[in-house]
Image (cartoon, rainbow, N blue to C red; front, side):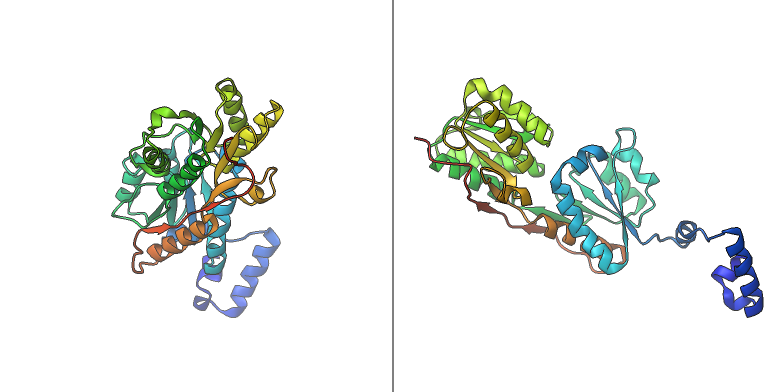
Length: 317
């Protein structure tokens, strides 16, 4: 039967037709994955995720990112496998993913996962991480984007600012995207003669519900502006303020980071930092497939950000 499916030239046409007829009658189909693994290729790339699948799917950022990666997979004939932590361990998930390479999202390079991929010789591309000389890397100008939005709030006259960070966040030393964003906020504060100790920092998971809860906890301190490091946290902040009868932006200004599609029609329309999420996904998949095929390795790539001014932030009177 193996010859009939894999090496038809080694048997007669009549014999092959009889075998295929019997196979169809029995409902037999060849194990495509097994054949791919035997050949050392799966035509599939994995997205190694830092959080459980339910948390990932709750964040619209990943929908946009996966859209971009999926566009390249469709073009190149690859499938896309989401690989969340196994038993709360990203490292444990790696051996169970039948893929030719990984897009690694949001992991620090000194963690065991990157070392394990290096040890196994599996091609990978780093996203939202620090640079690793052994692999392509795609990031956005997190520091510049955060500096620009923080500077904007300061220029509007805000001095009592609360920062909603995706926690747990590193110190503002430039490590990882959150560290770079906090460093950018620190840059803008320094220009105004302030430091990070002059702002209130809350570290919460990147969900709308957590943005709501964190803002409810901040309310007694009455910040005049909330700078959220993701749009979904900003949405939750506005939900909480409106429920408390606090006007946005008349009483409290709110800004985000991402510029998700909803931000343009959210009420009030959200002032935020735009990062090219779909482009980042496309570039990550393109770089990875090139690495899998043994083509020239791509350099580290930094994509630009821009401040999108809408209606959710106003001058402090």
